[in-house]
Length: 240
Image (cartoon, rainbow, N blue to C red; front, side, top):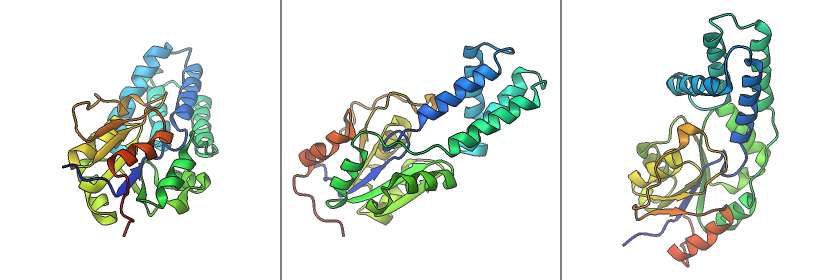
């Protein structure tokens, strides 16, 4: 019998607030700056390849993205990239780090509705300072019983977090827009995984939908989450 969740983990970027949209806008600026050196599709492929190989060095987030853009600019120009372009890329990254938070529809209402019924966590990955800034600006911080900013989201990481903050992964649910980071690892850890698609999802966060997993669910908006939880546990116990 499937045990109903008592702990709910929320992803942050593109689940509770906009994120990828700003990366796309900056990438568009990147292709404009380097239009004299390479076509947009070629630049996109080279940048994505740089991001993939640099994940182990820089992790996730804006700083690693900017460094990957600079590295790609040096490569495609055969080390002839003007200093002015490098300066523009750095400025674009600084603009991203200063951009105000834009909550997604129903984000606040959903977290507020569940905070009194479940142990609610924020589990996100990326640059520590940037994620702390966004959480502070979101106004949601007081609603979470715990905040975890991690380097990677793996089954072992989820198992450890849910063991510390709740009754283990078997009684936990993770909600997010990334199949690769928010859903599949939680399912592997024995928890529930709820996929909330976002119109823009980074290529490195995409994966096959685990439609045959018994603890997998998909909803189109966060507003549908309370009703989904009601079908799993009409009267959930209060968090301890």
